[in-house]
Image (cartoon, rainbow, N blue to C red; front, side, top):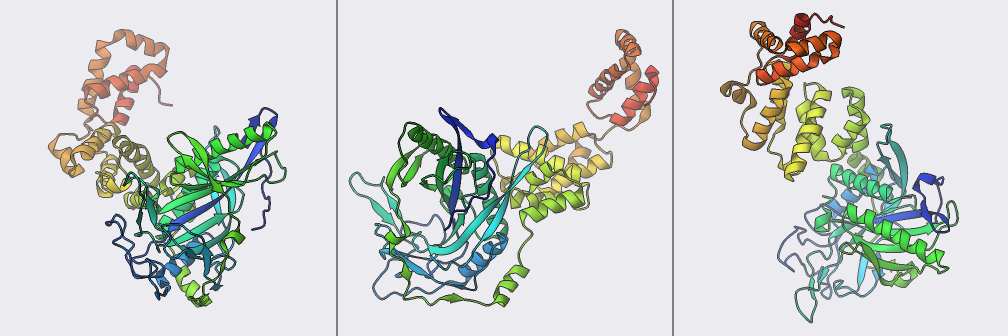
Length: 501
């Protein structure tokens, strides 16, 4: 690929060195395992977690005479992903053999795509922020290509003292390799890019994005240069399987390269691994170039061809993607960009929110989902898919607030009960006597008692009316949070002779 610099150097992303500022240049190659029931060129299962070497066909094991047959669903998934990346879908692509030896690659070559990929140039827009002013910075990262290829197996080095074992369950599983342009300029941008890409494929249903299972991993190309200068020599950090590790690997590698260059050395183009325990990268091998792999068209596979109608049909059934959903939440529900960004970050969170917000106040629903639900789930270490509080239960709590059946404080207590015990919110309010007190006579009695018991505080309020909030708090406390806050506030002001603003 031809390297083109499309970014204006930004001082806030520079790294200060001993001899001046440096700029990081990052490109990423993300391997996303295609969601399909069977492999790219065989009918073997792709189910994760099966016993070693149980998802292996004769094709995957490269038995003599076995021929690959393309899986149409994998092709459709690649096209869907291309459309989600606003990329050019190529109606004709070619599968090549990429030749190299490795114990977990039975054929001695990988079937991949080289010069003619199924998807060409596209783009992803990432958002960094908010900053101290609450503003977000949108940055467009170019996509160079997306190509289909088969995954290799897995070498196991910790099963025996002197031997390595090979598990071929992953061999032949369809991968989408999504290659970015060298448009990323910081570890934060790289993490935002990976997060956004994972979100997109999850919305599309083309990859589950489970990095801990290896179904999405990144090769990160890092180089440094003087701001705005020529591109430096890059080093590739292989198979990074966590967004946090991507950031750590980039930070370490950039400073390693800066140290070498400032000492008068030069960077060797090589492949490196990131050690998360030590927080550092280490050399693996000299980086190969394309010619080292002796690419040539696979003689067992015809060119992959489809017409515009095939692409159009897939495009017609694409789901609403994160950027479009965020824009709709802001436009139709009046949410802030920040709240909308949080809610669309994961499809499961967006789906949950929409179920809660249906027919209700969008801003109120967003506050409860973001602040109360996601905050609680974070504390107990659960994902949105594991939430003990259903959308119907949270929606019922909001309905009870709107109907003034319960106060905001009681609602918080009710939420905790639902979170830990479950149950129907309306029934719990009835059976546990949690209804809000709206009887002005009862509230007036409580206000009178608090005022009578605190003459010194009354005198202070006369001098400084803003202290009336103290009485409101005391009344709410004395009624167990059940008094209607608006009624309490109005009565306190009336009794103390404070004029309404």
